[in-house]
Amino acid sequence: MIFTVAIDGPAAAGKGTISRAVAAEFGFAHLDTGLLYRAVGALGGDPIAAARALSPDDLQRDDLRTLEAGQAASRVAVIPEVRAALLDFQRRFARAEGGAVLDGRDIGTVICPEAEVKLYVTASAEVRAHRRWLEVGGDAARVLAEVIERDARDMGRADAPLRPAEDATVIDTSTLGTADAIARACSLVRAAL
Ligand code: DC
Image (tube, rainbow, N blue to C red; front, side, top):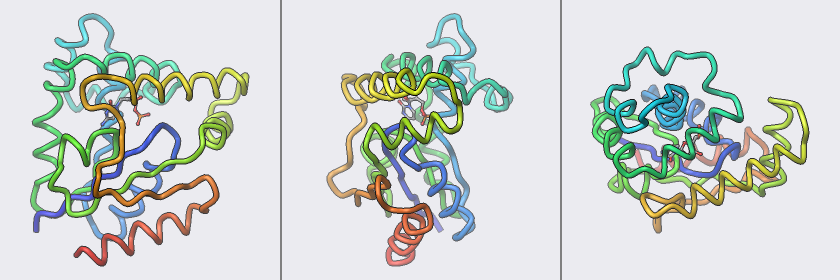
């Protein structure tokens, strides 16, 4: 069975948690596509060459979850050649036999517009910054500023900007708890199956 769940949205909206839960519930493979851009940013040097040579080992680095790695990822993600180099791998993953959940920024709009289920998971910048701050600590005002800066870059870039696909269902986790958000996502997938 070919079945793709596309989950897009800004940083710290809860995409990862929902994606992992949906993948576990239905036995689908899961790809956190942000990791690809984080690994390209962390490799340094020429980002286009890094994206073209990216290997599974590069995704295992333990420094990919930091705020700095997120900013570096967002900066390399504006480069069309970087995005192009990562496209085929993501498309093949999305349409591989057995079902797949991909989370990112452009899954429902560019990588897999034919996805059977498209979700756009979002929350206010303040709520997302607070969640990120609970994970990374430090100066809360700086964490909020970084969230706002990254949103602006991800939404404002010319190539594959972050935006909900026209046929995406929006899940706002500002007020919806984790269990309810997961239940909503799972019921949409069950209905489409
Ligand atoms: O989801 P994340 O925070 O790990 O993503 C890090 C950055 O990578 C994000 O700010 C923009 C970029 N990205 C992207 O451009 N397209 C994707 N599908 C996933 C991430």
